[in-house]
Image (cartoon, rainbow, N blue to C red; front, side):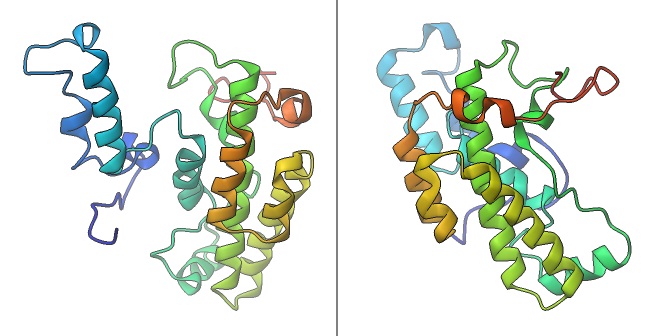
Length: 215
């Protein structure tokens, strides 16, 4: 909804998980003022998760929603900023990381999760990231006539399509990129292990870049 709080500036927890004005009090309540997380009842946890989601929280179990938020900034594709403004930024030598990939940048030394994610979960996150990249790039390219900005976004879209071709469920998304189709794809994939299809495509960095996913 348009009247929901939105994150506007700078990286933070909210950059990935959504503006927290509405969901943070719910997310942090385990059943009362002095109730700790380990004492939370199953029914309360179920309701807490549902209510937090309804008020705008993107959980770690919602990889596509997380990836959508990442791509807004890393792809120079925030919907509230015009294509002309982004074109001027590129013209002034603002960088655009066309190869930004969510697994590479989230699984380095400063991992959000203490335990390493399984190959299956990383593959799911990787596919979600490519879907979000395709959508953001396609939409961004359509809102400007600037050749440099358009070319940069089309490169992002082409790269994402090249990866998604390895995923059978992505055929409709590649043909007609849209948020609705991307969500249907992720729902169809569910908990399927795609590591055999895309695991070898997930990039990694050398030991000199410890804050990126290591090879």
